[in-house]
Amino acid sequence: MREHEVERAITTWTQGDYAVVESWIAPASRVVLDLVDFEARPTLLDVACGMGTVAVEAATRGAQVTGLDLTPRMLEEARRRAGVAGVSVRWVQGSFDDLATLGSFDIIVSTFGVIFASHPEVVAGQLASACRSGGRIIVTSWHDDGAFGCSGIDRIREIAPELPEGPAPDRWSDETALRSFFDGTGVRLADQAYRSMSLPFASVAEAFDQFVLYSGPWKQLMSYMESIGKADRARAAVESHLASHATSGSDGRIHLNVSYVVSTLERRRGSESV
Image (tube, rainbow, N blue to C red; front, side, top):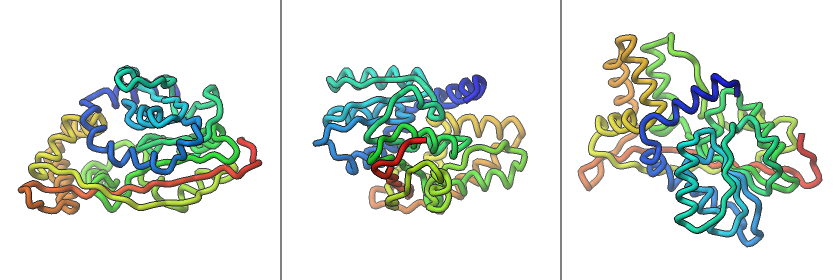
């Protein structure tokens, strides 16, 4: 990333309160750990590790863990959590498009992290280069048929066509696109598993309010829509999107269906990183 892109990304992800967002998605994030053989005491790199949910848990299970994130505030909390858990993790501040100095690893995971890369082919090449022969890369990504799918943003683009283009995280769930990202890297797609989880809120309106309150990207987006006088229309569009993915629970709350995909990629034994 260029310096201005780094600063913009740090600003985005430190707005709101990511600890709340991370608590929402933690169960989906931890799914990657079910795919790791911890008896082998693997070296594991968590790319865009956030506040350390996966990295710290992996360390408690016996992995030799490196956690990488761009945001100092998140790494500070990750260090605190590792201390509470009594485990040692190597924490590195850095970008997912520059992994060259970190070494090579048996397992690389990224839970809803690298999917926000502006240049996915570049990041895929970095992931592949950091993956040892016989190693695996496990990525979780939002699927478009759930509440966190990109169709919500598409509805806003209909209101504000001038909205700057951003990453397309749902592409990491698409088999064809994912294979193209890693084409020529020596890494192949081995498996994709579709999963879902449910997030409870008092109402669709409360869900929207909490997204904007706690999520930096949503906070920035709605600030922009406010600046062009289209915040009310954007809110209505997003609430309509969320309502289409909500069911009423017996507890009196609505439950948002959030779909995601767990993709496992492998470097063939004997193949060299590029």
